Each structure stands twice: as structure tokens, then as C-alpha cells.
Length: 430
Image 1 (cartoon, rainbow, N blue to C red):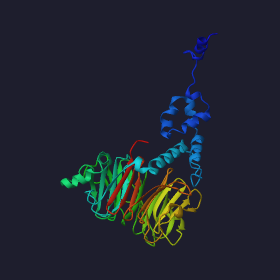
Image 2 (image 1 turned 30 degrees about the vertical axis):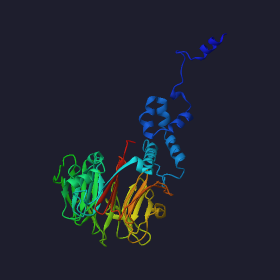
Image 3 (image 1 turned 30 degrees about the horizontal axis):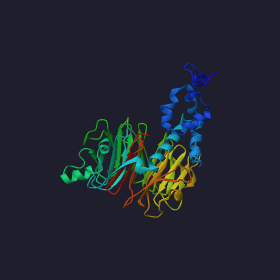
Image 4 (image 1 turned 120 degrees about the vertical axis):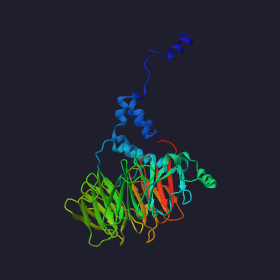
């Protein structure tokens, strides 16, 4: 055989089978997957063949992927959640939040609006809240206004545009701020529920507006009335649960009427500062220095746990079996609600790293599968890993204490300090 014939034989013929991606060994495919974003695997790679879908649809792959990057025990409290694709979602959240905020200067856009630039903000901001679709930010505070911020308009505006507008004398808020309504007292609490936005205030009301239909200063859709100033509230389906400054709890069914369908007052009349409701079980914190569970059906408190360090809770976040409490003195505590009793599992104060003391109140607390996010009157906001060690991912400092915070499904972050609102959002889709 001559040389030309040998070279000809080495060239694959067109009719010979070629190796394809989904025929590679599982170990190699999983190694390749490690170079791709979770969304790329789910939305593109897995859809190319049934074998790839089977490999990357296996929850064990996502558990191992998290473990390889962050070996620490996770989640802190094993929750045994049976939700489909729960580990895939956890992996996506951890990798996405870490990637975006670990290098925030590169991956996140930022706009900070002070008293002059944010034309409608006339006083300290007590609450911020993203709409469920992520298109609006709502703020409220001591000027009694509930203000809507158009995030699409803000994203299109260059950082220097605001200053240029001020120099020309043009209204600085014209294209991105609108007034939803005004309460007769300070606004303390904002919540988003579907297309609805609710605002709780010192005037003993919760105003509920439909953001799909409200324009400018449109009247609220519904006004819910309580017997005390509203300090906190949340939604569960068609029901709204509110805590008041005089120690009361009021439950509304918005399908029925504007008066409470259930009320419970505490004899000591200490302020309720955080509420969370699941079915007929309400978790409360407040200035009575206790963490409590109220059984709505029985109308009685079933559990009362003292907060350590002669302290009281100011922020409450409940995720699955984990109950997170931020306190007046700057502590961050983790409780387990999966058992019969609320058990204090971990004092996370040292790991989170805020200053502790009478002037270092935790004013924002958000915990999910991707991070632990806190802000405090110690002038710092921190994002940390959702593990016991809580390694730092991101930090921002201001010249005064933070007063409010929210984090959206679109990975946007809002912080408030004094009459200032800061907004961060991803530069690219992740």
C-alpha cells in the first residue's frame, strides 16, 4: 500500500458514525457542565437529548456541584424539602448571587438617589419593596408618601443624567417617580402581592393598590382599618396579617371586608415589629422581648420564647424550617421551627459581623437559598454565604445607618438610608 492510500484511509468517511455529545461518559458530561451556568444547562443543554435531560435533571448532580464549590454544610438547618428541582434552584441561586455580588463593580449597575435627586422623597425612608414583576420599586417613610420608582426608566438613565437635569431646573423625578398615594401618618411597612401593593402606616390603615391600574395619585383599591398604628404586615393568599404598635395582631380576608376577621391583643401592649403567617400559624417578634407563635384557630399563643441578651426582635425572615431574627442590639439569630418547639440553633451574630450595641439595630434581613442579606444602623449592609461560617460576598457602607432593604426575584437590591435610596441590578441577564 502506498503512502497516499494510507492517508486516504485515515480520513473519516462521511458515512462513518461521528461521536456526539450525549454519547460521552457521564463523568465527562458532568465535567463539561461545570463550565456552564445553571441556566445554560437547564434551558439549552438539557433540552438537546433525553439522556442529557436525565443526567442534568438528577438532583444529586446539583447537590454535588454545590458541595464541590462550597464544602460547608448547607442548608444550615436540613429541611428535607421534597419540592421538584429544589437543588437545581439552590445551585442556581448560590452561583448567581455569588457571581453578581462578589464582583459587583463589574457585574452590577448602581444608582443612588439622594434627597435632591429623588424629587418626591421628602423625608427618611422607612420601607422599600419591589413589585413582583420586578419593574417597580416602592418606597415609603416619614413624609407619608408611597412612591413608585420606574426601574426601566432608571436603567436607561446614565448616572450623570440626574445632575444635568438639576442644573437645567427640570423636575428630577419626572420620568421615573410617581406618587401612588399619601397616608395620614408615617409609612412603616410595604408588601407586594401579585399585582397588589399594600402599605401599612401610623394612621392605623393598610392601603391596598392594584399596580396594574393605578396611575399617578390614583386612590387605593382598598383601605384596611386596624385599632393601632401598623408597624408590619404580610400576605398569605387573600389574607393579610398586621402587627400594631400597641401590641395587637389583626387578620383580614380581603375578599370579605375591610374590618379584621380576627384580632388578638397582648396585655403588655408592646409593639409587634415582625409577623409571618403560614396557614393559621403566626410567628411574631416585638418589643416584649419574645419570639412567639399564635394559633389563629385557637386564638391563643402556643409558644413564647425569650430573645437572648435581654434583647428584642426587629426583623423577621422565615424560609422553610428556618426562622431568622434580627434584633435591636444588632444580633442575628437562627431558630428551627420544624419541631414542636422553636429551638435556637445558631447565634449568627459573630459570623454576620455587624456591630453590637444599643444603637446598632438590624433594620433589614433577607435569607434565601443563595445568601444571607442584612443591613444595620451600624452603617453597613452585608451579603454573606448561607452557611454557618457565612463568608462575606459583598458589603456596602453609608454615612448613616440603613433603615430599609429589599431583594427582588430579578436579583436587584434596594437599600435606604435617611432620605437616600440606592438601587443595584445585574448588568446582564443571568
